[in-house]
Image (cartoon, rainbow, N blue to C red):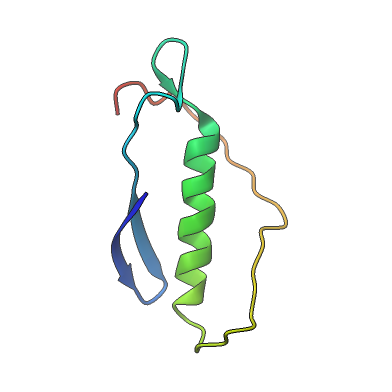
Length: 73
């Protein structure tokens, strides 16, 4: 994973698929996308918070509805 951009309330991430993230039929595993969504959302939320070294975060609930498989994307 690589961070492409960080702005106020916005983070853009990029991930290179190396093969082990693929399911049969060259479909990207949904967990990879859900993890990127979770990390991007948490990171974007952190852009609005002043530095607090003891502040920790965790995701309580995350639901992703996939409309189509990401094949070769």
